[in-house]
Amino acid sequence: SIAHYGITTAEPAPPVGSDQRSVPITGTLARNLEFLRVLGFEPHVENFYPGIGRQYIWRRGRADDVDYIEQDNFTSYTATPRPVTPGPRQGDTVFRLTHRAPLAALRALRAAGLVQVDAAAADAFERGERAWLLLASPSGQQYEFGTTADSAAANHRVYVWTADAEVDRSCTQYRRHFGRVHVESSELHGIGRVELLQRATPGVSIGLLHHPVAGLSPRWSEDIFGEAGDTHFRLGASDKAATEAASRQAFPPGGDVSFVYFEDSYLELVQA
Image 1 (cartoon, rainbow, N blue to C red):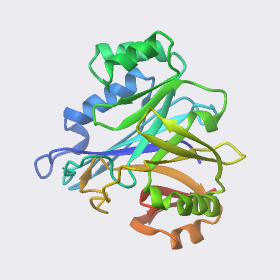
Image 2 (image 1 turned 30 degrees about the vertical axis):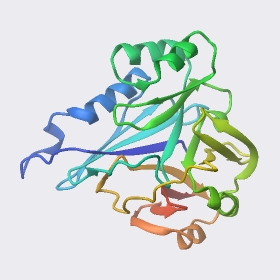
Image 3 (image 1 turned 90 degrees about the vertical axis):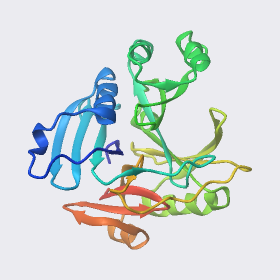
Image 4 (image 1 turned 135 degrees about the vertical axis):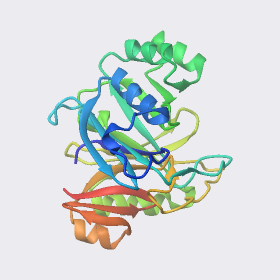
């Protein structure tokens, strides 16, 4: 499956009867799209759902590029921020985002005030003292940012916060349903340990992110329209029907895509 990441943000509902397409893009949505524009993304698909929200899918590159990527910017008129917790929630994500000229891109993002980032870490990245940088977009979504690699598996990675006690079981589930096998363990920017799962053919790598001491808060809801800051990503299953049966439905299927919660991650599930 392609690298397709999604983020839900809140947007005030326009007056009843408004043409959603003509409503100005403002606030967090506008800043998220500018963040993507600086990184080379372009508009791809727009969808409008009266009474629900708007969807702007932007992409960078061509589908056969090793760093091709899409981001789904979905706004909901009913979404509210999640209650603040001491740390991450089960199923929260960090998306890897690469760039062919990362230093120039980072400087442009910082100059425009479009990133939240530790200043010392960003300065070290710009001096070439570190290969990867943890940053957040205007929506607060975290990304691991670095230089484009020569393989899709290296460019496309989703880190999923997973309860420490559930890591082994989740590894088994990802192997069974998506053909991902455990290839290494490592630290991620001092925030936790990662069990990296990959498959032989190019695709999105999964990193089960966990902390052996600090616990995770549970998911706040399973309302894909009600939770500002909720994320999703796309994965192709070897047997889509079996994976659906092992998941919880998040929303009725649309075409060849099913919307499910798999291991507490909201997935756009497709047949591999």
